[in-house]
Length: 142
Image 1 (cartoon, rainbow, N blue to C red):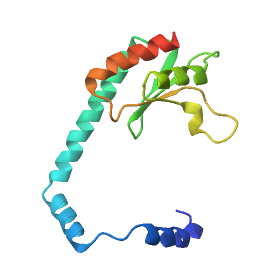
Image 2 (image 1 turned 135 degrees about the vertical axis):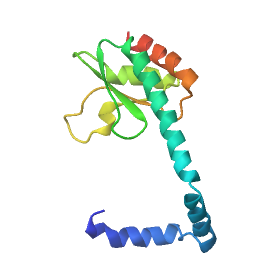
Image 3 (image 1 turned 90 degrees about the vertical axis):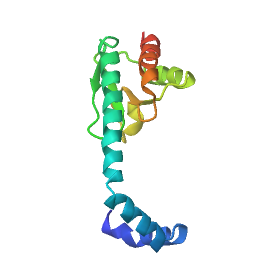
Image 4 (image 1 turned 30 degrees about the vertical axis):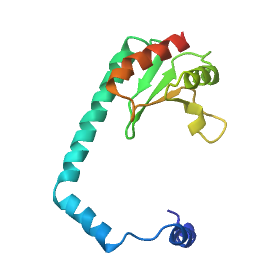
């Protein structure tokens, strides 16, 4: 955080949230000491790595016109068109109307040189829904 914002942040934070009490801190310390948190993190990593693998496998056969970037962090994958003529807005609107967890890549940019593409969230998508989701997205892209 920029040093110039520390005071303002601390002031607002103090007004909207109080620090956790001793009981909550003790419970968190016990949870961390019991190694249950480490087990949870291992399980979550395995779960999300499996989902990413299913997305990669489904995309490999469906999107010759798109390049897929794996996340360096987070629970999303990015599809970018290999050629011009990709109508990001139209595809995102249609995807969102059908309930697909897709956002326009350009919406994450500030400034005029935004890249075009699709951001696929997979944090809350069950494994059984991934192949149908990618199939529907393939149908929308055409």
